[in-house]
Image (cartoon, rainbow, N blue to C red; front, side, top):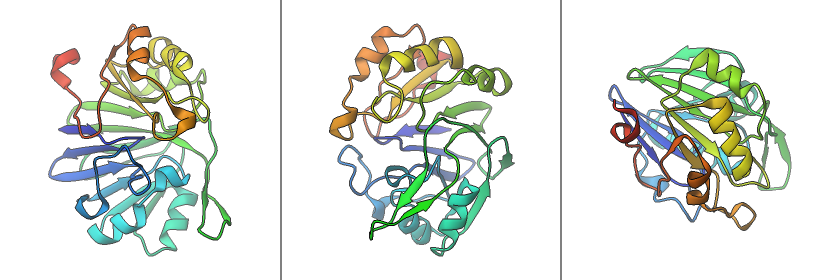
Length: 233
C-alpha cells in the first residue's frame, strides 16, 4: 500500500489496484503538488462539507467516474450535482475494493458555501478510519480535541498512522494535538495536517514533532508515509 500526503488535509492511498483520495481541495490550495487534471482515482472520501475539503470533488469524480463516499447529507448534495455518491453516517462501516471505511465523530461544523453565497447543510463532520492491506489509518478530519478519541482508538486501533490537524483557529492547535496524539489516539506514527494553507492556520510541523512522545513524520506535499521507519512493517 502507498499512502501519501498532498497539502492541507489531502491524502492519497493506493491498494488492490484501487486509488483513493481524501478531501481533494486542490484549486485554491497553494501548498498542494496536485492538479485536478492529473488526479486519477476510483474513490473520493470526504470528512465533511466545508469548501476546503470538498474542494474539487465534483470535477474529479466526473472525470474519473469515481465513487464519492461521504456523510449522508453531503452525499445527497453531491448526488444532486451528478456524482455517484455513497452516503454513510457516524459509526457505520462499509467494505470497498481497496479496503473498509468507517466514519467516526469529529467536533467541528459542516456546510458548503455556493458561489452565490448560499449555504448548504452537509450533515455532521467526521473522522475516517480506513483499513487496507492489514494497516489501520485514522484521518481525524477537522476537529477539536475530545475525550472519545481514546474510545475510538480502543475500539478501532491500534492505528498504524493517524493524520491529525494542528493548524489552530479552526481545529486543534499544536498543544491540543500533542495531547490528543500521545494520550488519546496513541498511533504508531502521526502525520500533521491542516496547517500553513492560510494565514490563520500557520504552524510549524517540526514544533509539533518536537513536543511529541509519539513517532511523527512531517511530510511535504507529495511525500509518502514511510511504514518501515517507525513501524517495522
